[in-house]
Image (cartoon, rainbow over all chains, first blue to last red; front, side, top):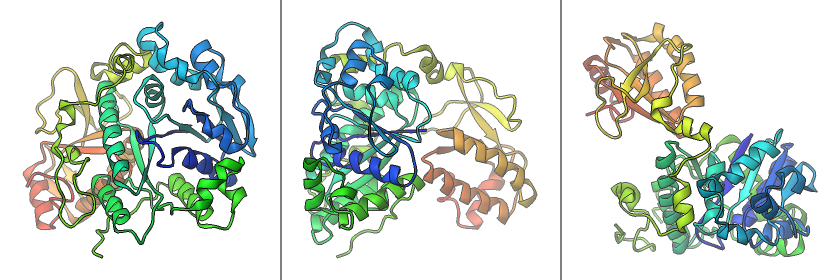
Length: 256
Length: 172
């Protein structure tokens, strides 16, 4: 079972879009997927077209079993929605350092037999994010092709490095280039910068900027249901394949 | 920490600290509770994994020997609180590669960091060096950190003759 957090400190880079569409793409390739929405905004449930009033908030705050919160959203995809109260977990005071391990414990007790667990993480550095980082061995960092997204990656990598050093472990990091426009020099420069700092870790497919990708979550459909033959579907299908087979991009400096 | 990059639309490079190695000197401010949880006592099994003192002996891996934990410095002789190394033995040739490959393949699958003890290597050939090259590439693809413990002069000279010093990450 691969447990992968989809994280970046910067909002709007495609975390939820990536979690949503990767989950469905992996499921369509025959894998069983559990999607967890650890972002109090709760957009992942909306993206799947389900009501997410209760879910991980009950797991994190009340200790309910994760298994009891799961909803079948697509064939081979089960979802744990965020729930309305998830943001309250940031203010839970009892439990001491064990608060950082609640998600990890919940996964151990409530999940088995899945090929993939994808966790949509919040764009923050609080207790929810810490729980996500304690629970995973791999992180997928979507990075949109703009400068502020690089700042988000930089901030996130500092936090991750601190945690890895504290726990004497090395989390596997994958980078996914999102909202990519080949015609923009800035986009190519951002991608080159990522290749420079993350050799062998940038997934082979760059997800192209696509109106359909921006629209589909609002309809409760994944990109494969909303526009199955467009660039968005093609790119996320390929990105899922990259993740499955650990296929990365070679670094080739843009000379143009 | 941030540097301007010429001929790039990016300007100041927010990732430059990753090359400077200065990440350990400052961290972004985080919620106090979340700062604590990463460093205070974790569930027992996690603490067990995290402490170098508790790395168990592996009786099933005859090639392993203890060396001192060394981050970015030359390895030192074994002492308490050690990171286990994999001893390459005396021969790094075509006849030894098969055994080494099957043992190291397992380590690559299970470890985040491997230390190769090359102190005893006296005999190398092209096949052995090519295998090491392939190993390094496989390790990079798996994001496994591979370090050397006392690479012998035979290994260093052999790698130099084939132009593999940099690829094998041996000292120049």
